[in-house]
Image 1: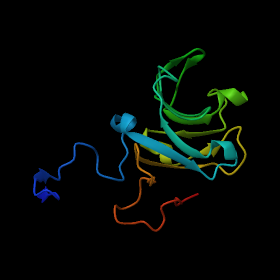
Image 2: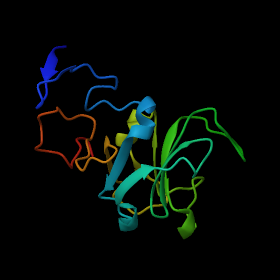
Image 3: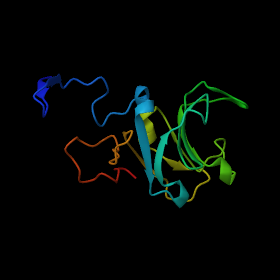
Image 4: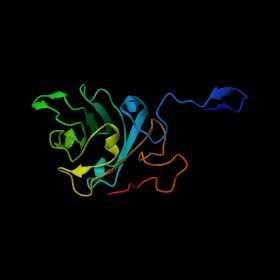
Length: 157
């Protein structure tokens, strides 16, 4: 990594403490937001920001009453425990809870970007992308830093 000169002539290292752009990891949970688009349940589309008050045993993001939740495998729930890590998209206010969500995706924290399936929600399942907190342009996780062409779609859907 090289040092870079800013507008004021100061040098700073281009080394990052976070993962490179395009790679999402769970240690970034408080630094990112998610964008849900294309869901058959139109009310679920929009930007979700971190909300640690929603759920003490999971990583939660909210958009109004809608919740995007990541549960790690092994977490104890009122009825057993989570067998596989998973992402859930639901809205308690609509009577759609995490136990039977609109949509879900199994896998790691980064897997929340792909593999969404309809559970109780109308098809199609959503496309989920992410961006650093406060940024406008979400990333799907498989984009190159200079590639702006397909910012919204994801392959394999």
